[in-house]
Length: 379
Image 1 (cartoon, rainbow, N blue to C red):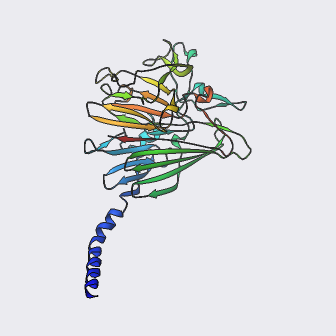
Image 2: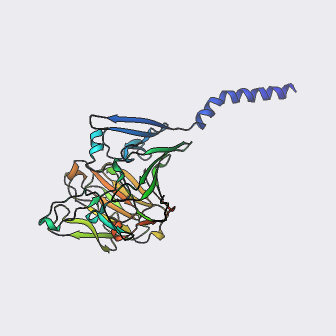
Image 3: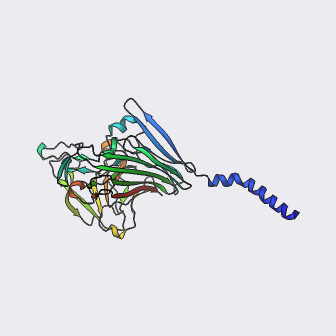
C-alpha cells in the first residue's frame, strides 16, 4: 500500500510540475485585437489577428469596406516574416481618397461595368461613374463604374473565433435597397481567417428580398503583391487551360492600355502567357505593362481551389493566391502608375462587366446564398 501511495504521489508531483507546460501548449497562439489610425481627414478602425507564436499578422478595416490593410506571413523556406502586400502605411487620407483600390473588397461587382449601366429583370440601372478615360474623339469613350460600392461603407462585427490553429473575424454589411444603381437587399458576410497555413477570406451573400425578386452579384479582391515586377513570374494553375478575355482596343483610347477595358465577348484560348516559362519582362524601372483578365476553361478538372503562383526570383519568394473563382485580373502597372513595385492579382467570381455579359454572374433568388473564398499562403 505504501509503495502504491508513493508511486501515486510521484505521478501527482510530476503532473503538477508539467501542468504549466501543458497549459502553455494547449493555450491558443492566436489573439484578436483592435487598432486604429487617423489624421485630419479620416479615422480607420482595424481588427487585427495575430499568431503570437510566429508574429504573423493580418489587419483589416471595419469602417472603409473591409479592405485588408496589412498582411505579414512567415516563410518556412526563408525562415523569416515577410510583408506580403502594399499597405496604406497608416495613412488615413489615402484610405479615404482610395486612389488605387489598395487591398479593397470589390462588392457587389468587381472590375468594370460598361457605361456604368446595366439591365436586370427588365429595368435599367445606372451606377456611379468612377472610371473616366479621356479619349480622342471624346464621343468614343465609355465612362464605366469600377470595383463596386462597398469600399467606403461601414461594417459591423458579427462574431469572432479563436482556436488552437486559427482565428477569425466575421464582418457584415447589408445593402438595404437605398442605392439607386443597386436597389437590392444583399446581406454580405466577410470572414477573415489567419491560420497556421496562411490567410483567407470567405464571402457569403444572401438575398434578403421579401417579395420574391432575384438580384445580381459577383465579387473580387484587389491586393498588391510586393515583388520585383519585371523579373517575376505569374503562373496560372496548370490543372486547366486558360483563356484570355479580350477587350475593346484602338488608338482612340489612352495609353498604355489603348482599351476601354470592356470584354468583347471573345475569349482567346488557349492562353499560355502565364504558364511559368517567361517573366513579366521589361526593365526593373519599366516593367512590361499588362492589364489582362484570364478565365479558367476547365475548372471541373481542378481541385476546389485554384492556385496562382507569383514567383520572384530576385527576392527568392513564392506567393500562392488561392481562389475558388475561375476569373483573374493581372495588372502590372503599380510601378508606372503609383511608384510601387507590385503586381495586382485580382480574383473575381464573375467576368468583368458580368452585370451585362452575365459570364459568371450570380443571380440569387430570394433567400438564396452564394459563397466563395480566396486566400494567400507563402513558401
